[in-house]
Length: 186
Image 1 (cartoon, one colour):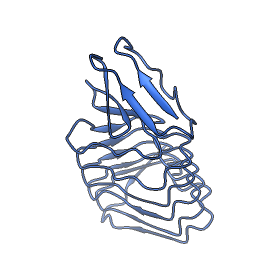
Image 2 (cartoon, rainbow, N blue to C red):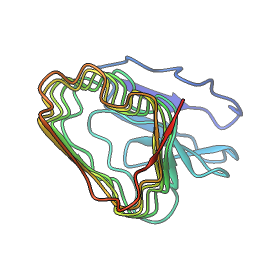
Image 3 (cartoon, rainbow, N blue to C red):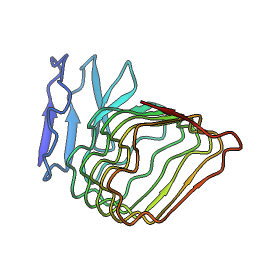
Image 4 (cartoon, rainbow, N blue to C red):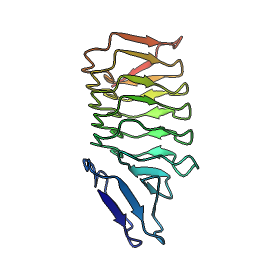
């Protein structure tokens, strides 16, 4: 339920705590020069990357987080909602992978890239508001988001990789606001 990272820890592997569904608290000991914690989020200080969150995380709004890392909330089935602050510009692959409790999300206008598998298997995700400055929607971003019924792709999107809506069986309406069709990648 709780993680305490000692001051001497200088490396934490990707997805180290992925799937720890009971996790509610993260603390980094004072004096750690690589990581810090805030709002029950584990943050790599220099890169400003949130590397681990939990069901009751509150992403700091002070600019200390500019990206949500790979599998940061991976398997966090208890996460029902999260506010992504305007300081975030990138959401890396699989950031919200398997967050089956997540029902809605708003991607702020500061986000320009949403990489592959972002909301992979978020089966109860019903509502997504994408950034008006989003340029890239990664492959399988919404794979198996079976509760999605509609999606609006902002005019700013220039690239859609692969099949971002694969196995979204109830998605009946996709509206693209771009006057020039986005480039379809891989």
